[in-house]
Image 1 (cartoon, helix red, strand yellow):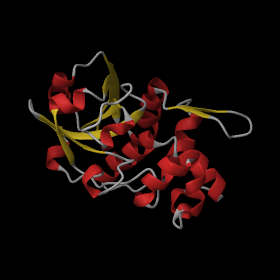
Image 2 (tube, rainbow, N blue to C red):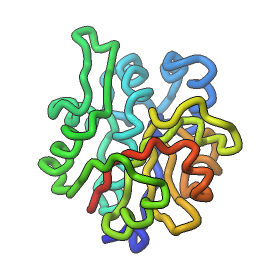
Image 3 (cartoon, one colour):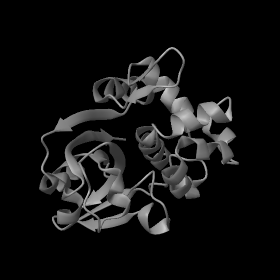
Image 4 (cartoon, rainbow, N blue to C red):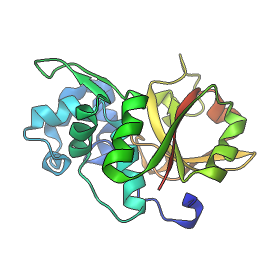
Amino acid sequence: MNTATRTVPYFSQWETASMTLPVLAEGASALLRDPLWRQSGADTPEEYARWAVNICGMACLKMALAARGELHRTIDLARGCTAFGGYVVNETGDTIKGLIYAPFVTFVAERFNLRAETITGLATSGIPDVLAKNSAFIASVNSQIRWPDRAPPTKGGHLVLVTAATPDTIRFHNPSGHDEASQADVELPIATFDRFFASRGVAITL
C-alpha cells in the first residue's frame, strides 16, 4: 500500500528533535545533554550519543513502522539490525559502520515482514515509479539537504524517508532536519533533490 493512503509520523534520529544544530556545532557530545535520551532504548547517555549520530536509517524504519501502528525505540531497532550485520560495531563500541543495505533488507523481512529491495543506479526522475510500487523509499542523500539552497560537497551519506513523489516534486521526512520546515513533509523540486541524491536506497512495502 502506498504511503499516500497512510499518515507517516515523523521521528528525529535524536530523541529531542531540536538537537541538530548543537550536534553540528559540538559533535555527538552535545547529545549527552539530551533530556529524553532514555526514550531511545540506550542504557546510558554515552551509548545514546554514540548511536544517535549513526541511526538515520533506523529513524526512517521507525517512521515506516509507525505508519502501520507499531512504535519501536530507535536503538532497539539498531541493535536488532546489528545482529543481522546491518551495522558493524568495533569491540569498544565507539566505531559504528553502516547502514549496510543487504543485511538491513534481511532484517526488516525477518523481524517485521516488510518487503524491501535495495535499488542502485536510480535516477531521481525514477523515484515516482518506485513510490508507485512501494510504500516508501529510504533514499541516500547528503545531509546538507536540510539547507536545499546550498551546494553539497558530495552526494549520499545520510538517509531520508521519501513518502511521496510526482514528476515535479519529492516529499520526505528528514531525521536530522534542524527545524520544522526541514524535518517533516519536506517538499523539494526534483531538480533540487537530485543535487543531494546518491542514486541509491531501499524501497519498502508495509
